[in-house]
Amino acid sequence: MSLLVTLTALLSGPDQPGLVARVSGKIFEQGGNILHADQHRDMEEGVFFQRIEWEPRNPQTLQEESDSFVVFAKALGMTARVSSSVHRTRVALFVSKEDHCFHDLVLRWKAGEYIADLVAIISNHEIIAQAAHSYGLPFYYFPFESGIQGKQKAEALQLKLLKSLNVELVVLARYMQVLSADFLNFLGKPVINIHHSFLPAFAGGKPYHQAHERGVKLIGATAHYATEQLDEGPIIQQDVVRVTHRHGVPDLVRKGRDLEKTVLAQAIRWHLESRVLVYGHKTVVFD
Image (cartoon, rainbow, N blue to C red; front, side, top):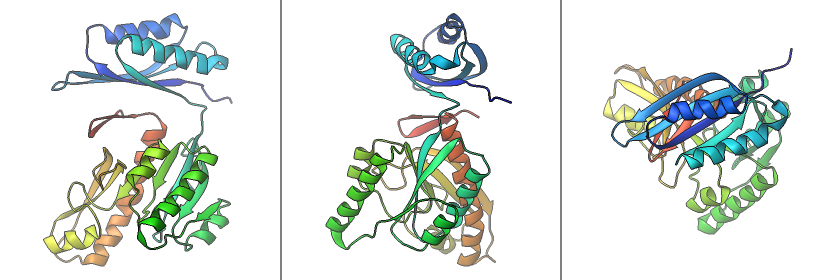
């Protein structure tokens, strides 16, 4: 049984009358069949967002149809990103010592949950090397020498590897290093991070310890796009779990790990399915 080949477009731009009709008409003119369509209007900013998925008339001309749609959207004053259901995004996982998100994501990928290829496991520690090899995944070790120059050297080597592998998405699966602004700029690809708190609360290091000290009744996890500002990138997904005064830091860590895995997994799935539109410090996530 062959899989249905589809194109999905994410559009955003100034709202104006007739956008939905014109977009639908464009797909109809190309002989496409719309399968799903959803839209949202930011009432304060006057910005229109749409996600539309369709079956093209000729699956052999996906790139041509994608390029044509982007040009069409630009003529409307909109920006558009078009992806195909047959494209397998090339993903690199960055890890440190904690391995719960790493194992969860790899097993989901092996189970076929993601239309993607895991092309590299990158770490500043060697602890996860054996586990990566047991999954048949390439592991790359980049130790960080002390000082700014040591960090710059490691990041330069990482960037060289990512470019050579044509990586399209980087996932920080509890990678306990802050990516520099230069790294993010030179990479030029989306980076998804999982932070073990309900941002903007308890940003930075040891958030479970911070939460315990404040006696909070809810702890959370946040998946967001990484930016130059630590833990302030556009949020993709969040979730929380209730805690009480009886829970110590180890309890918060244990409960939090379950949240981290599910929140990160969902954020990656939405990204790969072209359901996330970033604008400003926010995201629109089409379910």
